[in-house]
Length: 87
Image 1: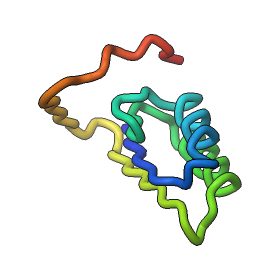
Image 2 (image 1 turned 90 degrees about the vertical axis):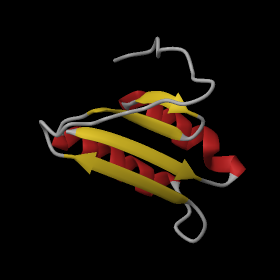
Image 3 (image 1 turned 60 degrees about the horizontal axis):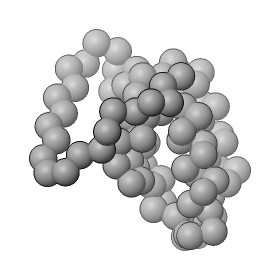
Image 4 (image 1 turned 60 degrees about the vertical axis):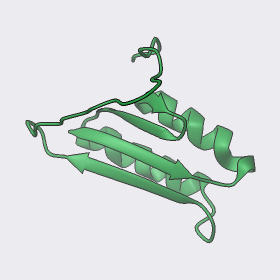
């Protein structure tokens, strides 16, 4: 399934969330990641995030699209270079 993750966390947890996201997804914009994951990988990712965040302050959005869904992506303005750390 296609997954998009957007996060807003306290500065002291940014590096932990960033590291988790990089393990599973492609970094596309500051606090935005995307990529294809299996349902098991999504579950592991969510569980890992739950252990790191402060539920009273941090906010992590996980959008999942079903397999085969058309994902249209349009990039406007200065973009980032293509990811080089693809799993």
